[in-house]
Amino acid sequence: MIPWFPSRLATVLPDDRGDPRIAASLRRLQASDYDAEPVLRDGATGTWPGDYPGRLILALSRLASVTGEEPRRLRQLVDGLPGVLNAHGHLGPVHREAVDEQQLAGHGWLVSGLLAHHGLTGEDHSRVLALDIAYRLLLPAATRAPDYPRRRPGDDSDGQASGKVVGRSGRWLLSSDTYCVFITLEGLVAAYAHTRDRTLATAIETLAALVVRDDLRGARAQLHATLTAARCLHAFHELSGSASALDAARELYELYAAHGRTANHATWNWFGRPDSWTEPCAVTDSLILALGLWRTTREPRYLDDAHAIEHNGLGHAQKAHGGFGLDTTTGPGRPWLTGHHPDAAWCCSMRGAVGLAELRERGYSLPGPGPDGVTTLSVDLYRDGTHRLALPGGPLVLRQRTTYPTGGRTVLDVVESGLREPLRIVFTLPSWTGPTRTVTTWTARGPVVSPAPGELLTVPAAGDSWTVDFPVGPRVRDAGDGEAVALHHGTLLLGAEGAREEGAGAARWFGGAEAAVDGVYRRGGVTLAPVRDVFTRGPGAARYRSRVVFDAPPGD
Image (cartoon, rainbow, N blue to C red; front, side, top):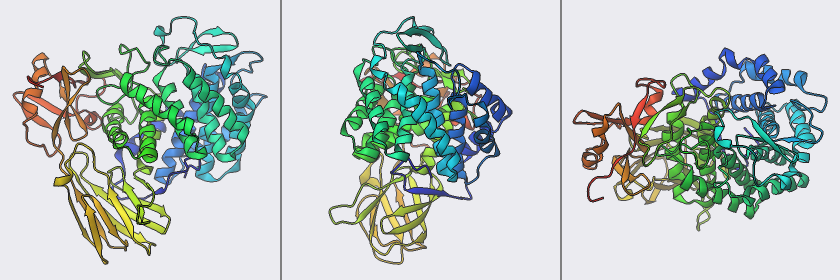
């Protein structure tokens, strides 16, 4: 359990179905290129001090929290870290006057990773290392945020998949990963969660002022940095109640959704750069942020987005080898989804693992009691798995089995229940489905009331079973300009693999197609299949090419 996420209520339990994506991710992160010695060496001597070991410690700690097993490599990283720290207790050079935003970003991940390890194991060693870095490196640097330049030297358009220092302005050493200084918040918010120290809160607020000061779209800020800031400010809101932090997080989300999101709910690498590539680190940030904003606001669009990001953005980014790759950006005028780099081992293959763990742990939420005072449990994500939920009235263990996202049937079996009072269970329905066609059934020892589709009121008992079944079928969505469309099976984005140019008109017949059991549609030599299936089948990451934006049908 990671203690600095205050709203997490579910503990993942062993389940006989497992999770093939988590298993593949864990295998990838235990390959030889992630051996502890070279990772620690890179963290100490590379151009992103602290970044590589920080991301890997965080990823392995989060995977361990959902698998129940601590990888040996995680222990090697944490035990080996003190041996590569400099005399000031951090990694990389000691800057007397300059402030290196890449060093701050890397140590944001390192502090967060060490505190995640502490949350996993309870070992104080990790916590002491993390807080020492937070107070001695991140906190003093945050006080210089007001001096961060509004105009940046050099041309950031030459930035590569892995950023580099491109110039200096005043004290600041600036990266082609523009505004990566925002990732300092990752470490500061994690440290604040453990200490509730007002000094750290002030530093967070100082960086937040920088986040809202500049025109990030005009400055072509990196989406990963921007969405990390938004995600961390939302977490700070959950911890402190800061209304301004929530406002900033929501505004940044709107900026990303309008100007940085692709047709498959991935993200551009930079604002204003559709010629670049997608960035699964930012996709993970957008997923966590969407789920967080759903929990806070209960606005359905955020949960709809989270489902789409899970299956089409993150789901397509993960390749069969378990790592996460970069792809082309898609949208009006950019219809083809294909690979750019098959395995972003230096960042995304680690960050994507955190997204997978988040999905395992965040499937349920507590929106607060209804007007009748009854505790409400919201089922937000549909995924096979078993969880122990810490509810106000006692523990509840649920096993979920689902056909989603290709189908709409989900069964919740009560394995154990310590509840003695009624509980309202709400199966949250995607906004695109038909609630009037949703069927809710149950078998229970006690009385059950179903006041609305997908909603039950009962005192749960072991052996009870609750089922919801909502329609999932073809739908056509505007791709953003009114002249092009994206084709979906429920939440799943469909692509025409290897389609020729005449495949652009597939939308003409798709709107009247029958629902496909597996989400795959075929007609006239064109096959439309979920883009997430690149993980399990298809021509592979290197040769994958799929049309995901189509000409709008006449009359639309």
